[in-house]
Length: 323
Length: 262
Image (cartoon, rainbow over all chains, first blue to last red; front, side, top):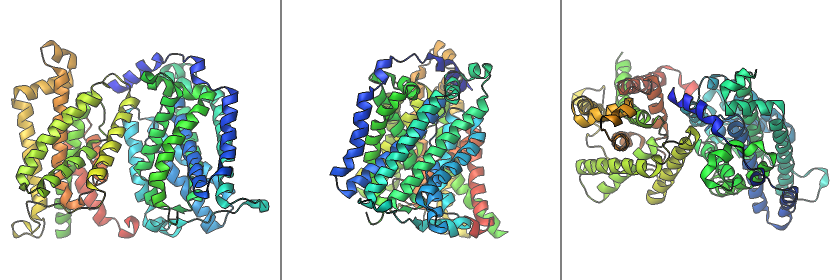
C-alpha cells in the first residue's frame, strides 16, 4: 500500500518544464523530416530495411510513451501487443489474402480491444503489481502463440512467412524503398494522431490521472475508463507497429516476440525520455512531461531510433531468414 | 493413482525451486518495497560461476559454497552501487533499474559463457530414490536442500540477534533506526541473502532446465506467481505458494489434454 501512497503523494512534485528545453523549432522538425524522406535515396536496400525497422520501433516506443508519459501507467508487456499485431497482419495476408495496407487498421483495432481488455484487470493494479502483470503477459505470449488450438492459423513454432508487397502503380522503386515510405507515412500519421490525442480532452484527462488520480476523479474524470483507454490506444499503436514489422521482416514466429523485445521498447522509451530533457538528473521529470509538449515528440523520435537501431541490427536480423 | 503421486512429488521438487525464488523475491520486496525482476538472472549468473569453478576442477560442494559466498557479496555490491542511490526514487525508476540489471547480467553471461546450452552436473545422481519409482534422487535432493535451507533461515530469523534486527528493519525502519539498528546495512544484508538463496535455486534447477543465460525466465515467473500467491510480504506464504505453484503446474501438465498445450 505504501507504494501507492507514495505514487499519489509524489506525483504532483512534477514541476513545469522550461518550454525551450523541451521543444524543437519548426525548422529542426522540418529538416529531420526532410532527412527521413531523402535518406533512402542514397543507401543500399539493406540499410533501407534497417531504417524501416527503426521507424517501426519508434512507433512502438511512441505507443509506450503515450501510456507511460501520458497516463502514468507502465507496461513491460508491449511485446505481447506487438506480437498480436504482427500475427493479425500475417494471418490476414497469408490466410485471407487481404491487402497488406488494409491489415494494419485491423491489427490496430484488434490490439486496441486486446489492450482495453487487458487494461480492465490491470486497473486494479498499480506500481509493482502492474509491472508484474505486464511482465507475465510478455513472458506468456510466445507460449500462447505456440498453442495447439491456433496452430492451423499461426503455424505453431515455425511461424508464418509473409510476402513482401511490391510498389504499386508501377512506381520505379524497390520493395524495401516502397515499404520504407509506406512506413514513414503511417508513422507520421500516427504521430500527428498522438500529438492531437494528447492535446485533446482525453489527453488532458490522461495527464490529470498521471499527476494525481484522486484529484482527477474529483474533477469528474472517469479514471477507470481513461486508464483502460490509454492501455487500449497504446496497444493499438503497438499493434500497427507489429503489423508493419511483420510485413517488413516477412516472417512472424513466436520466439521473435519474447520479453527481450518488451525490454528493448522499455529502454527505448527511457532513452527517449532522457534525450528529451537536457538535465540528466531529472529523467523522471522529462519522462512524465515529454509527451505533454508535442515538439518533444520529435526529439523523442530520434532517441528510440538509435536505441532501436542497435536492437534491430542485433536481435532482429537473427530471426529474419534470408536477410 | 501412481501417476498422480508421481506428479505431485515431482511438483513438490520443482516447487522447492519456486519457493526459493519466491523467498528471494519476498526478502528484497520486504526490504525495499520493489520486485526484483533481475532475481532470475542473478541466480543464473551464480550458477554459471559454480559451473566455471567445477570446470576448473573444484569439487561440487566446494564450488557450491564458494558460489554462495560470491552471490552474497554480489548481492550486497548490487545493492550498494545500484539500488541504494535509488532508494527515494519513484517506482518507474526502480523498475527501469531492475530491467537494466536484468539485461546487463543476461548479456554479460552470454558474453563470457556463450549462449549455447550446457549440461550441469548433479551431486545426487538421477537413479530412483530409495528404490521407489516415484521420485528421482535429484528431485529428492532438491526437496532436501530446500527444506534444510528453510529450517536454517527460520532459526536465523527467529533466534539470532541479526535476524531479529533484519526483521525489525523490514517491518518498521524508523523505529529500528531509533533503537540503534543500522537499517541501511540490514537492507544490504537482505540483498546478499536473497542473492545467495537465488543461487541455490539456480544450482538445483540447472540439471533439469540445463545451463544457459535464459534458463531462469520461466522459473522467475513461477517464483513471482508463488510470491504473489503467498502475499508478497510473508516469507512463509512465499514458500507455501512455491510448493503449490509447482504442484499445480505438474498436475495441469498431466491432466489437461496435450493437444491444448502442445
